[in-house]
Amino acid sequence: MKTKTWKKNKVNVVTLGCSKNLFDSEVMMAQLKANKFDVEHEAKTDDSEIVIINTCGFIDNAKQESIDTILRYADAKNEGLVSKVYVTGCLSERYRPELEKEIPEVDAYFGTRELPRLLKTLKADYKHELVGERLLTTPNHYAYFKIAEGCDRPCSFCAIPLMRGKHLSTPIEDLVFQAKQLAAQGVKELILIAQDLTYYGLDLYRKRALSELLEKLEQVEGIEWIRLHYAFPSGFPMDVLDTMRQSEKICNYLDMPLQHGSTKILQSMRRGITREKTEELVASIRDKVPGIALRTTLIAGYPGETEADFQEMYDWVERSRFDRLGIFTYSHEENTHAYSLIDDVPHDLKKERADLIMELQSGISYDLNQLKVGKNLKVLFDRVEGDFFIGRTEFDSPEVDNEVLIKKASEYVRLGDFSMVNIERADHYDLYGKII
Image 1 (cartoon, rainbow, N blue to C red):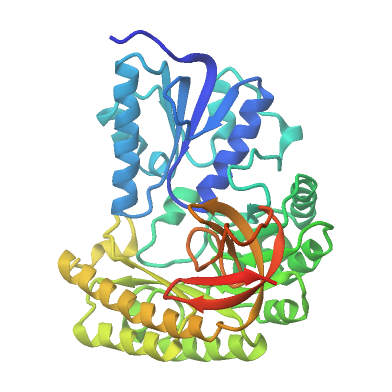
Image 2: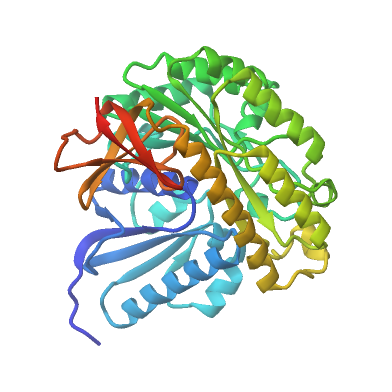
C-alpha cells in the first residue's frame, strides 16, 4: 500500500454525463461546503480523502465510462490514495444491486434523489436553507438551470424514467429566487434544462406553464440571455414562441430532440408524432420566430430501421436544414419498451448511418455559417484558448454548438462580457471576426 497523501475532509466530486448531472453535482457541492468540507470538482491531483462519483446510465458508452471511472477510484482506494469512494447518480439508481456485488470496494451507492442520505453517511446535515444554492462548475457568467426533474413520456428507447422517476416541476417562485441568487453572483445566461421543458407546470398548475416561467425569469435584473434546452415536439406549447419573439432576453434558440425522420420508426419509438407533423411543427416554429436556431438530436439504427427508413430520415434532414444537429447510435437498454424488439441493425451499420447524417449536417452547417459572414453579431465570451478569445452568439449553447473566435493579438475582450463582433469568415463549425 502506498503512503497516504490525501487531505482530511477534502472531497473530489467527479461528474459524468449531461448538464442535469452537473447541476446535481453543483447542489451537492454547496451542501458539502456548508458542512465545512473542502470540496473540489474533478480535482487534478489525487489528494482527496473522499471521492464522490456522479454517474450517467443513459446509453452503453456512458455506462462504460461511469464503470471505468468507478474502477479507477476503487483502485485508488486499494492503493491508499483515497479513503472513501461513494457513487451516486443514474447508473447507481439503475444498477445498484449489480454494482454492489461487482465493485464492493465502493463504500456506498446512492440514487438520483438521495442527497440527504449521502450527506448523512458523511456525517453532514442536509441544510434546507441552502435549497437552490450551488457551487458553479461552469464559468461564472452562465449556469445550467434545472426547472424540473424526471419524465412522464413513454419513449420506447429511453431509460431516463427508470433512473429519474416521474416528472416533478420546481415552483415558479423557487426558480425566480434561484435566478436572482445566480444573477447576484454574476451569472448573465441561464440555460434552462429538464428531461422535458415543455411539460413544465402540468403537475403543479394543471397547465403547461413554461411561457409564464419565462416571463418571470425575464424580469430578473442581471440576466441577459435565457436559453431553452430539451423541448419535446408532441404537444409543444406554441405560446412559448410568442414569448420568445417578443423578448429581448430569450435567445432565438431551441433544442428539441426529434429522434427520427421516419413515421414508422417514430411510431415504434412511441413519440406521439409523425414525420409529417414534425415538419409542420418545425415550419410553424420558424414562421413564429424568424431566424431561430434549431438544434436537434437523432438516433441511428433503432430496431427495425431499414435502408428505406434511414433514407427517409436522411432526406428529411437534408430538407429541414437544422442549424445544429447531433446523432447517437441506438443503445439497447434493459427494461425499456424497445428492449422487447430485436436489436437487428449491426453496430457498424448504425455507425455508418450516423456518420452519413453528420457528413450531411457538416455541409448544411458550412452553408448556413457562410450566410453570417459580414454580419454583426452579439457575442458572449467564455474562455481563452491558444491564440483566440472564444465566445458564442445567442444561436449557440456551450460545449455543443458553434463558436466565435477573435485573435488575441489584435483584440482584447473581458471574459463574461458581451461584445459586438463583425464576422469576417466562417468554416463548418466556427466563425471568425473582429470586435466592432
